[in-house]
Length: 502
Ligand SMILES: Cc1cc2nc3c(=O)[nH]c(=O)nc-3n(C[C@H](O)[C@H](O)[C@H](O)COP(=O)(O)OP(=O)(O)OC[C@H]3O[C@@H](n4cnc5c(N)ncnc54)[C@H](O)[C@@H]3O)c2cc1C
Ligand SMILES: NC(=O)c1ccc[n+]([C@@H]2O[C@H](COP(=O)([O-])OP(=O)(O)OC[C@H]3O[C@@H](n4cnc5c(N)ncnc54)[C@H](O)[C@@H]3O)[C@@H](O)[C@H]2O)c1
Image (tube, rainbow, N blue to C red; front, side, top):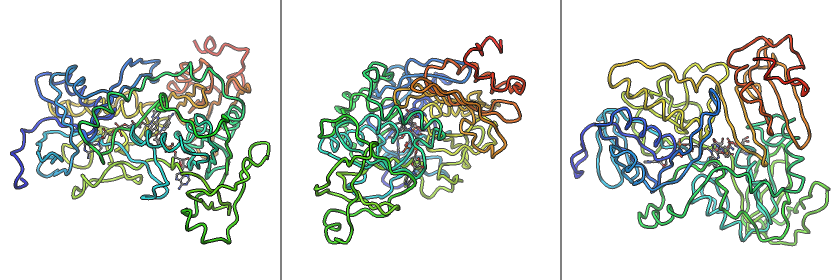
């Protein structure tokens, strides 16, 4: 044991991380072993709790997420003890974790749920912001209140949400692809959504919000704990609620999309002034009107791979995440996946003895069901945390456990541009090659429905709008019924599809 440290506490169940994965795991362990102490070690001063959980159908689930002081978790589960201190080092051979507060904790079984970090296009550039936790979201909001124009890089969840939410600030949106939202949609769905983006924003957007997201309690806690520098839990659904995402201008939306390009070089103002040979590109809106005369002097200039250069106040790098595996895990010989996550098997077990992992930190390395894939999402963090606890509990009493049903079918419910969006199975025909067919139904401004079929069986679906089809489609994917005979009728709006398959 490390010299100078107090003697370690006795071996117990230890969970690292106060996000959805860690908290769910700790709660389940506390339920399984009511007479044992469960230790939750987290670097952030608040924890994330799942509330109002609703199993909508076999696989689809809905819940709210609340940031809470850790004492609330301890009150609900008296056998959970929360330690608000980052893990400095894992010593897997000694079954021990060292925390920043100078203590060491022995574990009999450990679950690592330390989340992920934004993968920025440039590290260490003060004009490149990432959004992950409450602090980074508030920093972004602060910068936005002073901004006339920003650039958003990336084409996934965060970028989609930001371009819709930001008002009073020009947005130059830079995507590598030909259409928006490539992580979630094909070009057809993207076109459906783009028309909404161009149209005026409706009042209903505010009225239909779902998740409560409170930050007041957290701010006070953070000040008293002085945890500066540590990363907090990831945000989630409706993270922008309560943040006033408004720039300095009076207009609502002004978005210019640059497709099929990336960032080549970022110049600070002074560097740009020196390289005078470059001329500025004036961004144009969807009517091809110049949105600025660009006499401005900008703090930062971005050269894109298509040769254009834009000045802006700052850049948001919404370019995905990297699992948070270091430096506290250095010196431990974990197997890691291509995406840098800790590889876990079908029992959420890593390659090291008695160490499990769940949520954004891990890479699912089992042979998945043909209609499931890992995505670093809220729901999967909850499901993995829950299932990891079940596996840890079973292993500690020598029992076996079957794979949880939630990993049978990929299912995600979210909201983009104020539309309900349900993604099921291989919703973008991922991994199906050209051997599949698509059946579509689209009513502009109302709904977009896509079913992905292979050999007559439904493999995935995208449902945008209030389609009410999620449960039927979920069943069709799960039961793999041969749908060849129905052909296009499958999406005929005059046929009540639910009756069809009852
Ligand atoms: C802006 C934004 C919007 C999102 N929107 C959605 C959405 O609409 N729907 C959806 O499904 N998903 C969404 N996500 C993704 C979702 O938030 C994550 O997939 C999920 O929260 C991951 O949970 P987690 O518990 O694995 O990790 P995290 O929530 O990141 O928690 C990690 C925890 O580990 C702690 N930690 C880290 N390092 C240490 C250490 N060394 N020692 C101790 N503790 C440590 C952290 O403090 C934190 O408490 C969004 C993410 C972002 C950033
Ligand atoms: N409603 C939702 O479900 C939702 C909303 C927000 C965030 N999230 C989740 O939060 C996490 C972070 O969100 P995110 O949007 O950063 O990640 P993401 O994985 O959703 O999207 C990353 C995007 O960045 C692009 N990209 C990657 N490297 C790039 C580069 N060098 N230059 C240009 N583009 C690049 C990718 O092509 C992709 O479009 C993800 O796990 C995401 O699923 C989910």
